[in-house]
Length: 152
Length: 152
DNA sequence: GACTATTAGTTACGATCGTAACTATCGATT
DNA sequence: AATCGATAGTTACGATCGTAACTAATAGTC
Image 1 (spheres, rainbow over the protein chains, first blue to last red):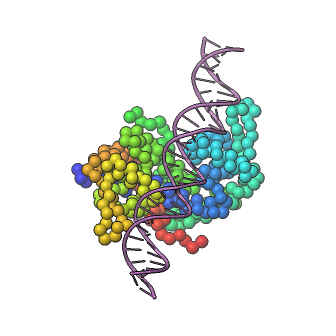
Image 2: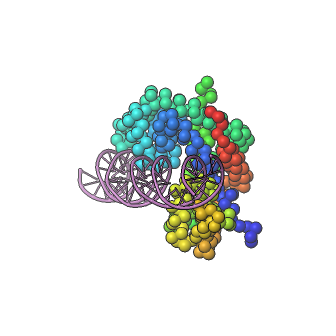
């Protein structure tokens, strides 16, 4: 069964990781250079700015697949920049509702311009058809991964 | 132009990263538990085992998008396990040709079984059509990313 | 209302990472 | 053949990460 051997080139985790790494690094270079933002910080800012509402740290972690300690540190850092402020929950004081300040929203808008430019660049590289297929496939994967693990 | 606003949900780097994280973590849990392998180690083993020839550390890094220090450490670790050995280049002693030992090949085959199982699981989750579209899109992205950066 | 379990978020600490500096080797130039 | 630049790989070190333990608050149970 030599014809049935394992092909690393078609192994989805390997492929996904490689592509994600390429794409993320090139974009990270842009916002790192111009805003001294780390990746967790950008991802936190993006989640808050994009959903346009206050979120808890846990929500941000779930939305962006970041470990809660990563979120915690990113929130602290953004708070120090005064791009984000905490609002305590009156009913349940364990929660902290996080929201962007005016400066934070401003920064988000600027970074968004970078992101749009990058997305357009990517689109021009691979074409509309491949881009849509890609996004559709990624959605399918995420949808499936959220379900509980199959009983081994 | 509110209709033209930035959509994080369709931003490829964000999406790619999320999906890659999900998929990789679940697979890593398997080989970590059974073989105490780290991710760089698995990736190094996979590259060598899959290409079925000796490679230099630099080649491995280029193939799997790993930083050279990561490769260096993974190679050391696999060498200590006696899954890999170095062969020095007679003509240019800067190069070290790395290849799997019999034990390394054996381990690769076993891990390959895990990987095939996981790939099959993923395939059953999203279907042949989405999987092919996904792999095609990923190939397109990588192809494009390898070209030099556009003059900013 | 005391006890237990659960959840949100922080932090201490050991592990891992990447930048930069290093060694060793080679090719090209003079 | 001495010098300079480039390349393969290693390593020192500061930065970042995630596990586990922690604090604080709440909900449920008796």
